[in-house]
Image 1 (cartoon, one colour):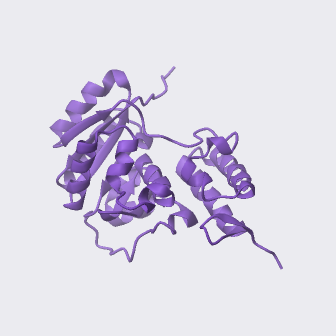
Image 2: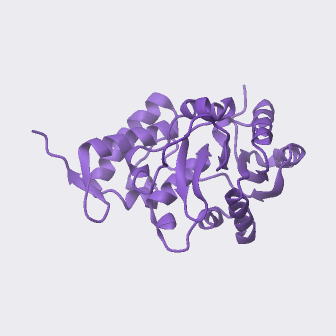
Image 3: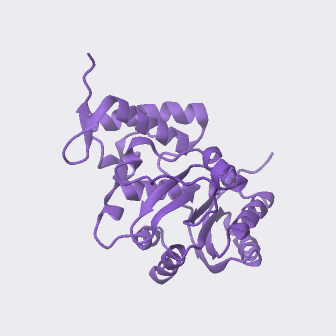
Length: 255
């Protein structure tokens, strides 16, 4: 019987070049790290297709992160190997491509108070995950400069092995957080208390029930959190309108 992959720590590092990111992702996959536990962020992915605009704080509520396959065709095949890829606006950094579970974390931050508050940016998000502020500040600065941030969630008893792999692939400023990245409703939501605060704050009680119902149906069908969250937001967008405070609370009237 194959033992289930258990992510207990998150190793992060910055890379100067995209080809290094491509290489380390393939090496991590070959060494048994699940594709659902690898994240990458960057501003300067080489692409022949120019993306017109980016997803704003308001836009993220409308659809969620796109599939990796779409962005793989734009930025190289390695992004198609990862889950949940999108373009998000991060204060002080600007529009970035975010792939993997960190994208969902950033999506929640961008739709809630973290990215909306004055002075908040990637540093705020990373420190809430348990990263030292000085290291988070280095990551933000290097992303601004056009470098790439990779995060790999790994079993605790193999974290040393994976850290050596990342360093040997060119990873710098390596850091380890003693936990995996947070995930809302991994196996389905039992109630509003299971939703992240960022999602709850943008939904009325009725809309929360609608979100949970659609999310739970989609997670059973796809077993993919990113797709389930996207399906749930699409349903909210179809059935509700926003009020003046940005809360999806007004049920749409059908003629």
